[in-house]
Amino acid sequence: MVVFSVKLFFSILVVSLSLLFLLALLLPSSLFSQIHIYGEASLGEVDIWSVRRLVEWRPCNWWLQGHQTALPLQTNGYIRVDCYGGLNQMRRDFCDGVGIARLLNATLVLPKFEVASYWNETSGFADVYDVDYFIKHMNGFVKVVKELPPDIASKEPVRVDCSKRKGQFDYFESVLPSLLKHKYISITPAMSQRRDRYPLYAKAALCQACYKALRLTRSLEMKASQLLDAIPKPFLSLHLRFEPDMVAYSQCEYPDLSPASIKAIEAAQVDRKPWTGELARVWRLRGKCPLTPNETALILQSLSIPLTTNIYLAAGDGLMEIEGLIDTYANIVTKSSLLSREDFTSMHGNTKAALDYYVSINSDSYIATYFGNMDKMVSAMRAFNGLYKTLFFSRRGFAQLTSQGLNGKELKQALWKLHRDDFAKGRGSALSECFCEFKL
Image 1 (tube, rainbow, N blue to C red):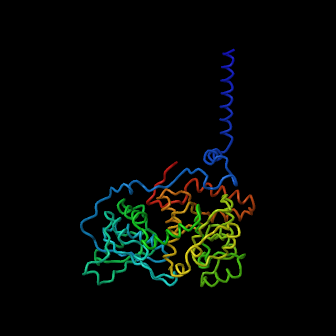
Image 2: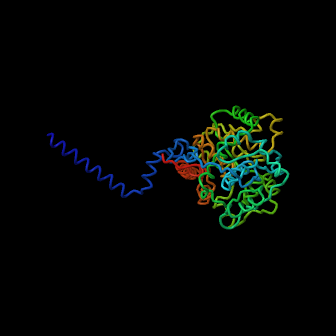
Image 3: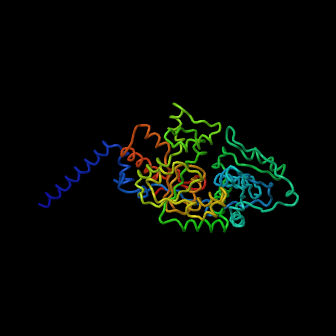
């Protein structure tokens, strides 16, 4: 009787294993991988943050351990980084400039921030960032000075052109000769540079500057902290880009907007007219068109973000069609609604951008509808601080799915799968030159 039971047990075991093996051969491997990665969860059952991640980005050990090449005793000269655009673009350029200064064995002069009426901006680097803190935390990475030596201080720096061109920009070939000759130069880093080709000591200087040495001034950090405290918790920081100049620059068609929005876009277009016909369709399918607030609300629902979620709207002035979001997600707060009128109206563009950045790197979760300079900086800083509820909406994916005629529940299910995969695999969540991929 015992022998019979043992034989029966092994027979059942062999049959079961055979069936599993046959099933593995017949079913697509991708299905098994999705079941293993994501479980059985689907639209409406859990929110996007409950999806198990496979990958996360963390600061690379070679940078954090601090075993850096000693700074040379003699400097090749002084470099000032001239920064243009919005605050986060200027921050990106300055971080690149720190790496370049170390690469060329130069002493870094405090950067020059653009004074631009377009951005309603007059504040400089020292108005936004704590200079002494920056210099202290860059010690050993690159030499930084507040003031130039007397024999150089009276001179304007020689401008060296680093504008984008064909091929990769070589700083040794194109900038170092001018630095050695004039001893004091100014640059705006080239967009075509290859940071991955930097020696580790230059990359470490860039990373240290961007993620450890740049801190807001005490007064600005205090204001940002007060703003953060005023936001109902827990909350999602949503970086939504749908301002007239943004839409005009994209050259995308939006036929269903209100007359007021269309008028505002036309006023901002100047000579950048929107694409039409087949070109407009192709442009949208390539993911070039900003998501509207209404489309943003639809994707949020697709990701099972509760309608009662507290949302801090990190956005510029003049956001259009905001009713499309507020009608669905009512618990929305902004800088202007939480700060006093006096505080808000006295702020310039850089100050407002700094507040949005501070709130976003400290939020419970962060979603961006566009992958711009702020989003790259925020996502990397959140990864640095171990905050991984960060996601970027796929404009290309949304355009492709809607072009297929998907709508209603079918569209929401497709959007869920698309963004579930992106979140699980950590796509676009950090800057690669300072962060390393870790399998979970």
